[in-house]
Amino acid sequence: MTRLLPPRHSSASRRALLQNLAPALAGLAGVLPASAFENRLPVDEVELKYKTPRTKGPKPTDLGPRAGGLLKPCTDGKPHCFSTSPVTFDDSDLYEADSGPAEEWLVSPFTFQKPLAEAVADVRAAIAVYPPGQSGIDGGGFSTVSDKVSETGAYIYVQFESRRKGYIDDMEFNLAKGVCHVRTSSRLGYTDSGVNAKRFNWFALRLGSRPGWTAAPIGAKGHAEYFSVNGLSEQDALNPKAKL
Image (cartoon, rainbow, N blue to C red):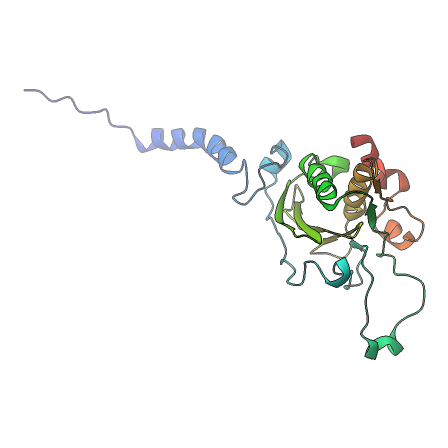
């Protein structure tokens, strides 16, 4: 009985086959980073052609709700953070307190005149419809990391990712007694190219348009250095208004 053996391929033909498949395999392997958020923008030709290391940065260990409904202030002195919570002092530190002008990172909290449950629902709804890539930021998508509600308050923590480098920014909402404190900050670098102002403004405009809410977006007044070093204009900072 004669057995038919499969045809043998030369090493040259195998190399040619692998060379033809290589671009497709590389493209598939780079479609999404292993840790990418599901709602990120689709991978484009730039990302496929110029693969760069993705750097999240170390997650801060001191985030979370604080006494009085506050959040962490911006403490690193870099123009890449905004917080509605001022620095607080113990009684023993009052003599060292700076009574000068408010820091540029300090912004006004949002307020709401409605039941806590309804206000929390509004914040969740705003997060749910946040468009990755709005105003040219957060193309890497986002994810809610913590969402806790009690009888007296609520805390929501969201991580946002940049599209190209994979930098993670941290944003928090702390709601209690009609006040919603907000903090948004980059983990790495000195400046942020206006990212945190644009993100804060999107939520300020979104929630501020809802019944019962008052929320002021960030402008250059009082934040001149931030706008200057980040090359941000008033128009660019308020561009989220067109995305609502």
